[in-house]
Length: 457
Ligand code: UD1
Ligand code: CA
Image (cartoon, rainbow, N blue to C red; front, side, top):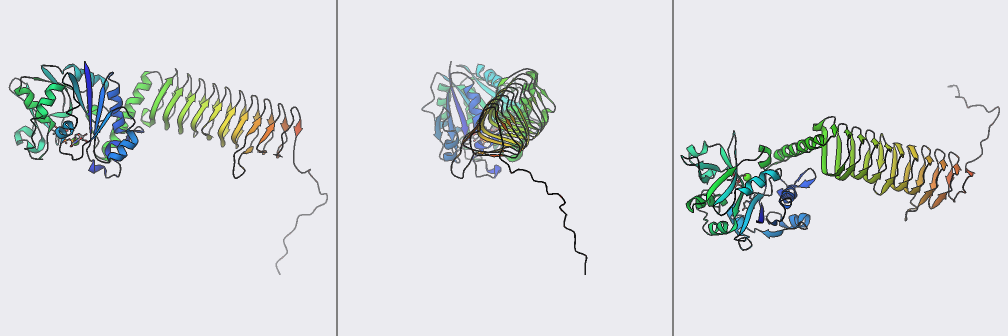
């Protein structure tokens, strides 16, 4: 079967009250339209076309790289008119799937079911029965229960408006049929629009059976028209992701307080995630990883056994097995920690490699550095990596011990097993196996008297 998918995305989205085209608003950190494109791409061999309109340049700039035939609908004259924009591209023998760019939660299983209903003699239509059908096109059936047409709310009689089965807009139809019916659409209706829904009555007239199917859950066919709906769908999407993670063996202390805005590309067993954790981008989590409360992680690979304590931030980093991060640690881009590394509170690490078993436990800045294994970096140690113009490298070789409150003025190397006395400012390389310190000698002034307050006159 040849599959062609049309994503209708030219709608204005006035009720979003936004400068941003509606389909670029995000759910879980990804534009609405990207969710729909991802679903379409998941259907295997599928030629995708996106009909865009409102804010076209912005849409192309943000998503234009996605593989699709991008076609602009210059005037928005209805869903039928949108499909007409690509009539030439539609193949007679293809199954054409129509999706909406602002309906992001549709599931692959539902679409697959729908596609089975489309053929030479039938058309697949996704419908749903709602308690409140206001605003939707109504599914009109005859005495045998067969679909005969769709009537839009604005064109419906009071009796037709009582019908609660509605059109989701999503359908699958043989290309040849679709093109034939597109040619016959008119805008002779209440909204003076070319309604794609008019093809249903044409199908029936041509003896094509309209085979309806329903989504697994209502959320799948909900669209975004305003910010309230955007927030609602975000929660539904997050709940779905949380549920899937729990099915895969992850403990979530509270699934309602967990957000994934991206993809977990690798997931071990027995991972525990406390409340208010946000994972973004591309994430790998090894077995036994524990993430404490209020943690934000973006694009990171966290190896097995790692513990991330409360209020830590990790971005573009690799954390080696059994390491312990936080609480209140900040791991910035291009950081690679080996196994069994400890990074404690109020420690910032940027563009640094830290070897196995090294510890940076308190109040430090380590940036542009190569730290060996078994190194102890004392409290308050700072790599002075920036001279106001350029960044320089600090190298701390294996087994070194850096006393508290040391400044390492880069470029500088601390030799293997070297010890730096607390409070030192190190500006030159220090030899291996040696104690280096740079601080004024202590003096003790005997008999010194503290000043006393003068008595008031
Ligand atoms: C449409 C259906 C209605 C259905 C409802 C479900 C028609 C005539 N009506 O209603 O039966 O119950 O969807 O939500 O099809 N779009 C374009 N170009 C246009 C017009 C629309 O690309 O010229 C896109 C929109 O961006 C949107 C989709 O088509 O993604 C549906 O448009 P919308 O205006 O929301 O649909 P309705 O006409 O309200
Ligand atoms: Ca709508």
